[in-house]
Length: 369
Image (cartoon, rainbow, N blue to C red; front, top):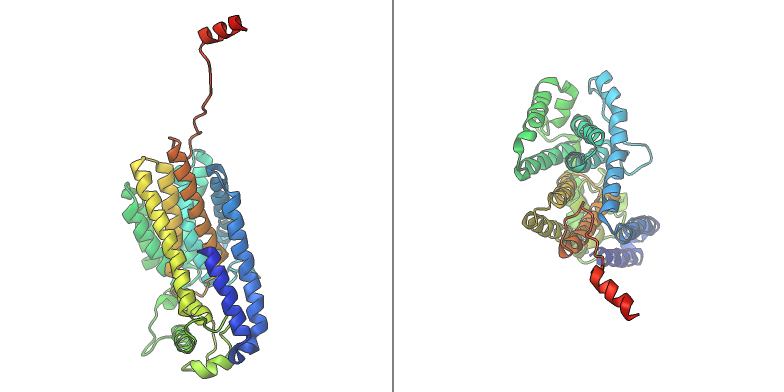
């Protein structure tokens, strides 16, 4: 599915660059195609290289640790300012914007939680548990409503899938109390989507961009307008408010405008196939009582849920983190199938088959020699 999607991105870029209406952004289209192609290439390389549970575990710890550094760095800032200012990711990165940073943290919350439950080192468990707890207020203080929606979705599903749900009850209570009693007024104002009589400007920007995407896709339903098609020239033709030029503000509307209904179908097919693979792994993990596999598959699919939910209002369709999670699901599926076929669960050492001869047979062989 990744390869098919990559081919379709190439086709839409070529068609867009050779269509007079979209020719004005052909340079940006090919630049973006090259950027996305590097992400998809490294996704495939990751699937090839991560061929054991030990490597998958290290990859998950590295990703979690990287975002853990950002959260730990922001903790003093959150305390000293009382949350009156937004949190941003590192400059000149894909998560520099507060909305994108909130999206990434949403995807990392399940990693902190499930890695803390599966790691045997007590210090590492304590560190991951602490990062899980402080990441929740960090998501709040990105002031991203899309990230908050994703956090709610991840939290609910995490609670429903847990056998020992009491573990999450203190976290839920703490989150609700924090939001009701200690959140600054600036945050509360931001979370309110309604103004006095109308939607706020941010919501209106999204609606305008979504209308633009839908109108453009209706005219070019097969290939869309190609990468970077959200331009002032095209907004004059397809947007209700031509002066309000913005990005897609949605994973789904972004893919629809840039790659047509065909591209959106392929993108959603990749998501659904990943979810279906995760569902099958989870079901078989319960059959084999493989608790580590079950924890890892829940970790990855909840991370995917965080992306898909927040992605309703955030335009990060080609987020490398999303494709990495897809790669991890693919790798986990193959690792589990191999280990279960050989009679052991992941996290254990594979049984070594040694061909040893009986002492009497060895003695007889020596006499014959």
